[in-house]
Image 1: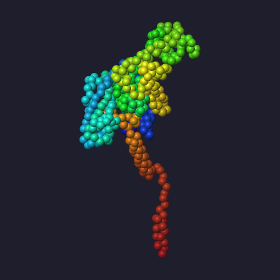
Image 2: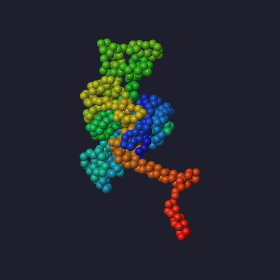
Image 3: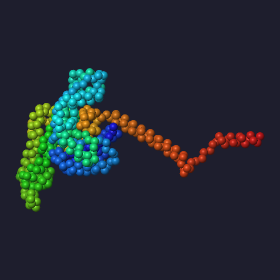
Length: 460
């Protein structure tokens, strides 16, 4: 069904809400958007339900202003800070010899049943790594294949129950009940990677305001996800502490002078080597700070983030097999010089900076690395090329087919036309029965002729 979707990205710096549904060509149609300053959220975790729910509610209300559509379902991003991931497998017999979506659902549920889930954690994703039919080679999509046995290997993402409950509570206060959860890094990867990158493998690093999340793809499947509690806000904090300046001034310095490649030495061609900044406690008092010193502070923190991610990838064994390379996104990917630094740290592994797929609309531009998660939520729920998986409700998500949506649209249009025809018929009947409306008199030609001949017969 072509339901109206509400997508919410709950970040530590901003909360983004988007209302969307499929248009006539099965593309994503944006109906309303909003971006609000985040409150009550830190490192992806809700720490104040009242403040978080108010910020979420404000974002939803702003997005609703431009549409009258009733929201049918919602999808919300969750941080990797409270997630655990495991692998599992399952197998079922195919009684009729033809694999249908029933068998695919059964084998996925069996793999989930075979997994050992920590009691205080809930399932968020069950993503198939590969299918097998009768011990054959790996299969991406076994639908309509012939065989007697179906096997699957899956990657399961779980999240701490208390964290999910807090999100549900904040959403319920905001008037949102029906919710599907999606891992933040998973959504970012969906919005950024093309089919070739997914097939050959790639790692997506999303550097946010207070966290850095990364996921690894291989063979069109999620195979690893990780999290580091360090983000761009730590650079602001470093500048504030090291330069003894208020956080607002530190943030301005970071955005205006943040660069890893510019030459700020006395011999540079820029003509600027120092900047005046206010002091903590007495903002009227200013002091001059060398820009190359600011550059050193920013460089140290970015280098730390990239090295921490590298160490986790190396520990997991993913680093030696990243396929098409590493893709960096998120707000910090706009920092000048981050790509050369990443190439140096990752020893020649292909590095690229990427923005999400830009969904054309009349409200906002999605062509921004900060929008990678919200675009991923939309593509995850409404995208055409998604694959089978079990969502956070443990229900099978099926690939969206353009033909099915087109048929649904045709059925809806036919029903509308039928209703309009019946309404017109009723209006005609009402017009005839309405004594206040005059209808033209019709002459009956046959009746007139018969009267004439009767008169003639009387005369003769």
